[in-house]
Length: 192
Image 1 (cartoon, one colour):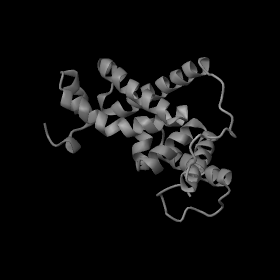
Image 2 (spheres, rainbow, N blue to C red):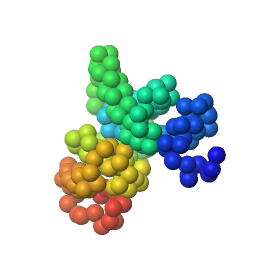
Image 3 (cartoon, rainbow, N blue to C red):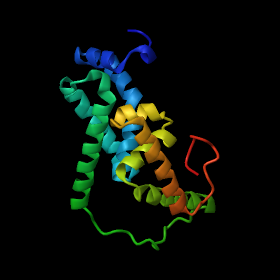
């Protein structure tokens, strides 16, 4: 096999269908973080996103023969991830138990810095949760994972211009939600 970076998704799918474990392992390496980001945009919780991403990769391995367009493996996988994550959210909603009150105190005092990070993380999750699902996915894949517009467009089966538009409006909505009105001075890099 060539170096993993030069082998296309289609070639890796073909090799994995023939039982090459290294080929599927390379596909997992390429798309695990993206699968997690998409699952997180649906579930909103780290643990559930990890579960959904891992479950999706197992399903993809079991159903690899069903991938009709091996070159579009990433898009096929992201569809599985979205569906598994949605199913997980539905299952969890059925098991929903009492919520711990926001003002409940921990038995162990937290340093101020940790508290600030937790609060910021909560505000960011809340802000992301206020976005439509596709905008969440675009922001997470672009700003968190570093994917290019073209890659996101291919993987989510959207026109590149639509991806740019989703990213622009998502960033604006995040700034508005978080109360920061300064424009993104870092270019394409990240959410302010």
